[in-house]
Length: 70
Image: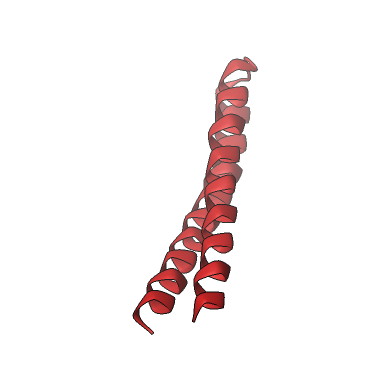
């Protein structure tokens, strides 16, 4: 089950990369000096990506755990 652990690690790292991208995108949006409505719209899109990246990371961790147990 080593292959399952490696796949899970890759999926987890992809999720963490997405989370890091969300952090950078939110910082850029705050520094852009947008109006409240424009900033809110941009941050809502970033939050959607953040939730998807978090789910991907959790799925990857689940694969790692399954690979270790099996």
